[in-house]
Image 1 (cartoon, rainbow, N blue to C red):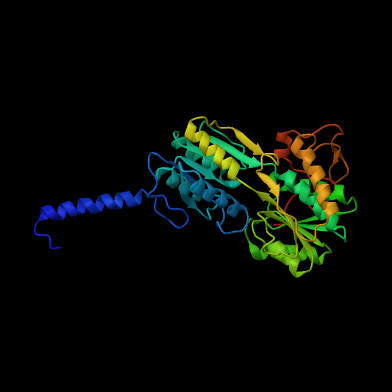
Image 2 (image 1 turned 60 degrees about the horizontal axis):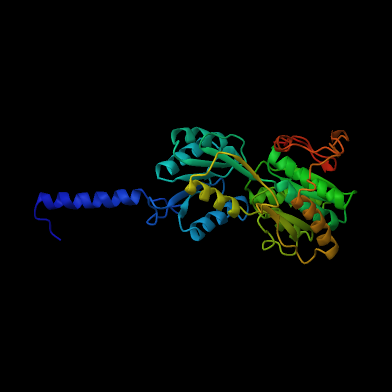
Amino acid sequence: MHLKNSKMRFTLMLVLAAALLLAGCGGGGGNEGTTEDQGEDKLNVAFMYVGPAGDAGWTYAHDQARQYLDTELDYVVAEDYVENVAEGAEAATVLTQLAEKGNDVIFSTSFGFMDYTIDVAKKYPNKTFLHCSGYKTAANVGTYFGRMYQARYLTGLVAGKATETDLIGYVAAFPIPEVIRGINGFTLGVKEANPDAEVKVIWTNTWYDPSKEKDAAKALLDSGADVIAQHQDTPGPQQAAQEAGAYSVGYNTDMSKFAPEAVLTSAVWDWRPYYADTVEAVENGTWEPNQYWGSLADGIVDIAPFGPMVGDETKELVKQWRDKIESGEWDVFYGPLKDQSGKIKVEEGQQMTDDEILNMNWFVEGVNGKLESSE
């Protein structure tokens, strides 16, 4: 078309500007998609991830739940997500961008995002922020996590039954309470199944480094371990176990597809129930800034299906302890519990409080490792 005068040019410029403005308001995820379905009649939900959505571990589990919200709840648009966000000032920038783009609910899914979530939330009091694994709340900020130590205990039972060398290797991320209590829960399960076994820990100071985590598993296998467990976001340790003809226990998601000959089971997350309940509460106006800590009974944590190498005796043992945990009859950190030195930390008949578990900074008897990393 040939524009014959400035008035027509001006009209076209307005049309183009409006189109660009509408496109700029879109909320694409890691792929910067559009948000044609977003609007005032939808609840717009966004996620900030510390790793890639395809990591097969921690972030993957969260992203599966995001996709569930987006496809299964007709009043929710959950297309907006940002991957590989560093646990530093970048987190504040990303959270601000997600808020400015019109998202009503924002989930920040790593411990290191905590302070940035609190700070950004102050600037957007009409939006709801949820932080995973933290402990700080505000009028519009809640926290959420799961009692993964319960699932860890069950996988420890499986590992304890499987080991023949009585040495189980554990590739661990960082020496923080989340990881420490997971190691402890796992070790208590190992010791219940096999009192002669111990759990040897190597710290990698990584969440997602396939090569480094696989090398750590190899070092543990070289030291005599014949079962490998992990608190990492990649299947590298599982693959190292399979290559060595050993067994393994995965984490975050069912890792058997990466090492089918090695994986006994995995301690897994299923965030769908929590995310669905939370966005529904926000939509209904009933949400409150609480600190959620879900359990086996809630379905937030669980274990993956057993590999074919796991026998019926082990399966029955796991069922017995699962039933005790889910019924509330018993939990993992009930006394008597000793630390590495043999000192009683929890007396018989006593149990650790949630606050004590959340701040756990000591290893139980049976762990071979230090509470600080070598780096």
